[in-house]
Length: 211
Image 1 (cartoon, rainbow, N blue to C red):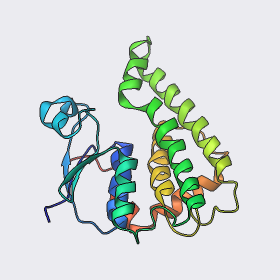
Image 2: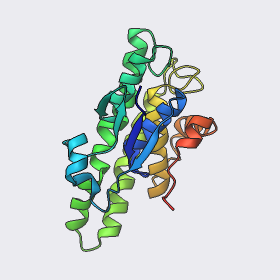
Image 3: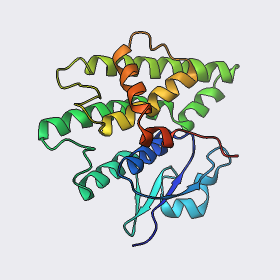
């Protein structure tokens, strides 16, 4: 079997998710950095991996995979003991709903291309970016906190072991802290994120600036 290669950017939330999943499943991989700020994601070699020009792209099992949640679901389906998605349909729905609330509602409006466009419309680009991030991350996570008010929430977002929902939550909390979003009304998700961060697989996936 060929080596697993992750084409990612250190601060990308989507890449962070896939790093966590690979670590949780003890899948060794080689990281190939794609510098978004330098525009490497728009170069022909990366567009050949992912025509969207996004990260991550994962070369695994002889296939090039894109879209972080689709990658995580592939890993769940091909490594059936992973626990990344629950065994029961209702549990899978709940974990997907929590995951999508972050990956499909919060993340897209805070993505690099969207935020750069917002900055271009302002006379104070940095202030505009920070205000935008705080608003949409803060509001999105406040709704996520309410979704956790459910008897199926345990030590983690769903039950007593990390799932795809926790894999999505931790990078978003990292972004919230980075931009100073108010999480004072979100004690449950903050506690879950802190619990996750103490797990070696999560800790090893944390964003680290290249030397």
